[in-house]
Picture 1: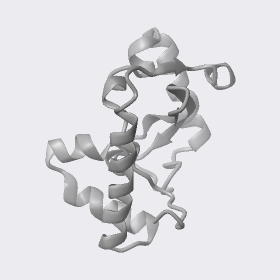
Picture 2: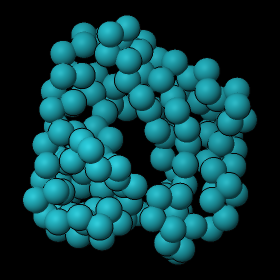
Picture 3: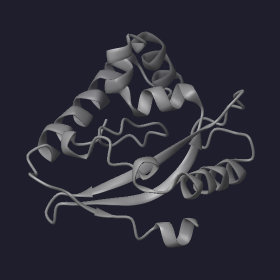
Length: 147
């Protein structure tokens, strides 16, 4: 799967970064403004699969600089609940909704179940590697562009 460009990916957050998201660190009014801007940019469509769901959800995209232990905000996008369930596959597994997420991943990416499993394996390997970083520094400088 490393050579295949996927539209929809798993984004497994290192365990030490759980619950350190913008919604929890920003005042509610600022978070609401940011998510509403993402919804406006999306024009009612999921920014990953293009579906027009009943409601959109805001998703924070992060990148991880493992060498320097930096968790950096890349973007805030509007996604449909089905794409969000795939992105946060670990949470989805805990809730017991895995089958629908598997099917959505394969549909959006035009791939087989074995390709789904390979991509999940790669995501899990990155998650294990990132969990070896004892403490991540948070870089939210991207907010300047998003506000």
